Image (cartoon, rainbow, N blue to C red; front, side, top):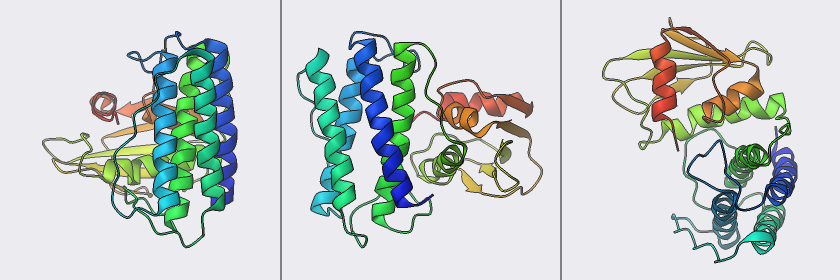
Length: 246
């Protein structure tokens, strides 16, 4: 996928998130984030959108604090989220290809603009799923190629950072495999007392494998639904569920 693809996905997913939130109502519980109501989901995601838009628009090369969400609720909060999402999409669309600004994980990206467009597309998709869960009914699907990319970003980006809590007291090997996405949609995660190290390859003898259709696996690795299939040592799947929250 390229930056234009991610921007298109970000645009669509934010619109879907707002529509699902409006249908659910801001009082609705979010089953996939049990401590949240829809108002918390909108405030968080809108604040992230505005934070990312400021980093890009102002070219900050160091991290910046999040702004405080407004004291709004109901339809006014949904409208604020829509404005936040539109600000982000428009900012990314107008940004130069050679943008220089701060990024925060090491997953391969060709540029800072590609990083932020990709990151916000996945941020918004996962939280759109949360909004769908709050609304009830059938959730909008996640495309296979996008889900594979999201698995890669999560494993080789988020959990390569020092703050990842997915660690073991002795070396362990975990495999992740998307069954519907070709032979290269497989990852080997080496777990130790240090942050995980992931390669996109079938390397070494894994003690456990998490597998399934790419869209289901993507959401499972973000702890939004159960892992479709677990083989081998199920304690590694339990470790992921317990420690991988971001």
